[in-house]
Length: 337
Picture 1 (tube, rainbow, N blue to C red):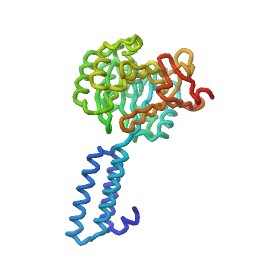
Picture 2 (cartoon, rainbow, N blue to C red; picture 1 turned 180 degrees about the vertical axis):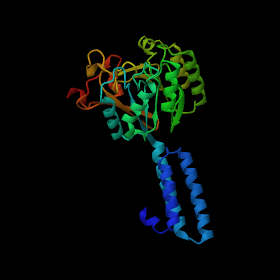
Picture 3 (spheres, rainbow, N blue to C red; picture 1 turned 90 degrees about the vertical axis):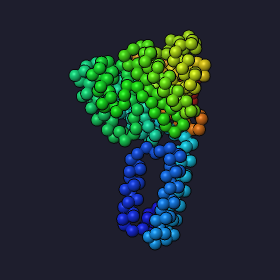
Picture 4 (tube, one colour; picture 1 turned 60 degrees about the vertical axis):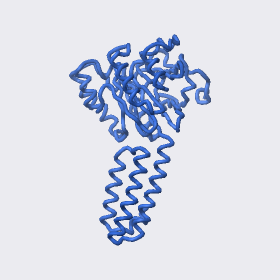
């Protein structure tokens, strides 16, 4: 690439470098957008070279860029990766969240999504300061796109809801597309039950994005856990999930790694990413600090649940299917060591 660029005037090189920097600062667009822009750029650059006498080198360069764009588009269209972080708080253990973020960065995810409880909360007067402190702690990682889910430690009042929106840049419920997947984030921060307005939002949101083949729903409290344990397929969330083809429903709050299946929908309770470990603190029962790398390849989705290393864990790694409704369902090679 440096050899190709050296053939052009300084102004051309500077312009290209500026555009490249701007592109790298933004998330990559869709495959269709990349290809369309590359085609138009190649054609326009070819016409410019003829008018201004730059000749074949610029046409060749535009063609190379087009080929690179095609390769990038193909690669991006085939797979992507994101990380799910568990609760930071609920009696946060000092140092764990920063280590979880360092572990996350080693996986180079396309984005990060939380399951809530990012601050300790409870006091309207200190909420803003808590958010500033947390964001300062993870400042080296803020170049990642982060999608926050509101938890009960984040939102407990009107003022705290406003703080959440101000510091995360997200409303209390929202959705987004990434490649072939659709993500819906719901707010049950102030209720053990899923509020009816959140279910209505979910219904409308999924109807608008019905064509997305892969769908995730995130919330903080696992308001679904009792009917799922009882294998009741008629509760409202399950009916909506089934109707619109939701594959994964993900929550936090318990600080325990658990996995449930009901009627083709997978329900996941995420382990902690800093909030205290309850009860026995046994790894096999789902009590450990972790981050989870989710890989989407075409129509398939895989979860790699990665325990934090020493002094808070043993760096064990498992898949979602290794876990069940009461903790570790099968003995893995990592668990056996």
